[in-house]
Length: 397
Ligand SMILES: Cc1ncc(COP(=O)(O)O)c(C=O)c1O
Image 1: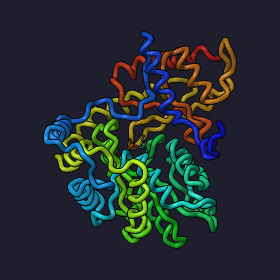
Image 2 (image 1 turned 60 degrees about the horizontal axis):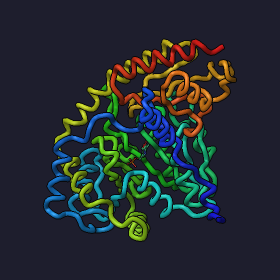
Image 3 (image 1 turned 60 degrees about the vertical axis):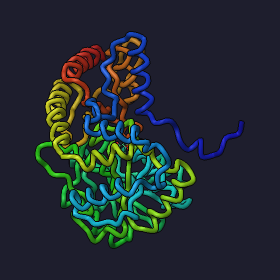
Image 4 (image 1 turned 180 degrees about the vertical axis):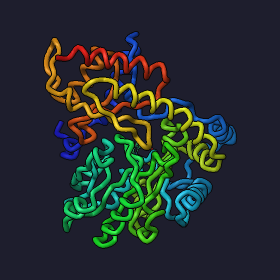
C-alpha cells in the first residue's frame, strides 16, 4: 500500500522501543536492570486513585467538554497562579491526553509548512517528529555540556531566520537534567521579544528539582512574554501518573481555541476519570513532591557516583528530572569479541546483551556521545546494573 508521505517523516519513539525490548527479555526470564524508563517507579498516590474510583462509582464516565472539565481547568489556573505567578482564564487552558498530545496539538495549531522551530540539543526525542508532523522544520541549536547545556544567546540569535516560528524550552531537561537559570532565561526572553518568537515551555519536570534550586519558568522571569508563550505541563511525572494520560497547556486565547478545535476532531476529551484524578492531584497537598525528591535524591547520587567510577565515562550531576546523561565518547572506537563500538547505539546494544542492562543511546536525543540512564528504579538495581556495566566495559579493548 502507498502510505502518506508524512509516515516517512516519523519513526516509533526509540525510548519506548528499548523499554519494550527490556520488558520482553524480562518476560523470557532474563533478569534485566532497566534504566530505560521515563517514569517514576512509585505508584500513583492513593488519594488520587481514590478520586478516580469515586468518579467511576458516581457514574462520571461520559463525554466531558472537549478541552477538559471546568473543575480541572480551574485547578490548572490556580496552579499557574500559585507556582508561576501567571494569571489565565479557564478558556486559555486545554487539557489533552498527555503532554505529548498537548505538544502535538500545539504544533498542528501553530505551524505551517516551511516554518522553523528551534530545538536546543540535546532534546526530548519526540520534539523533532512532532514538528515534522506539522510540516514544519526542526532547527537544532547546539548547547555545550561544559556550560551546563545553557542556551548561548548569541548562537540562538544566529539560528533565527525569517521562517522562525517558535523555540522549544525544556527545563528541567530530558535527557540532560539541566535547568535554565535566571540569566539564561532573561537573555532568551529579550531575544524572543525583539524577534517576536513564540516560546513553547515544556515544564513537565517542574516538580523534580534537586539541591534546593527552585524551578524557574520563563514566564516567572519575563511576564511580559505571556502573549507569545505557551506553558506545557502535565501530571505524568509530578504525580507518577504516566498511564493516566493527562497533559495541559496554557497560552494565548486564539491558539488555545484552535488547539481545542483540533482536539475536538481527533480524540475529543481526555478520559473523564483521569481528569477527576488529575484534579485531585492538583488540588491535593504538596507533600508527595517532597517524598518523590527524597526517594530520587539517593538514587541520583548513587547513579552519578557509580558512573563516574567507570573509566571512559564522565557524568555531570543532573539538576532536575530523573535521568543521568553520561558522556561515553572515550569508549567509542573500542572493540569487543564481535565487533566495534562505533556509536552510543552500539554501546547500548552491547550493554543490553553483555550486561543485561537497558539504557537509551544518545542519538535520538541529538547526541552522538552520550547514553541516557533513568534512575527511578530501586537502589540495589542501580548498584547491580552499574557493576555489570563496569564489568562489560572493562572487557572492551
Ligand atoms: C520532556 C518531556 N515532555 C513531555 C513528555 C510527555 O509526557 P506525557 O505525555 O506523559 O504527559 C515527556 C515524557 O517523557 C517528556 O520527557
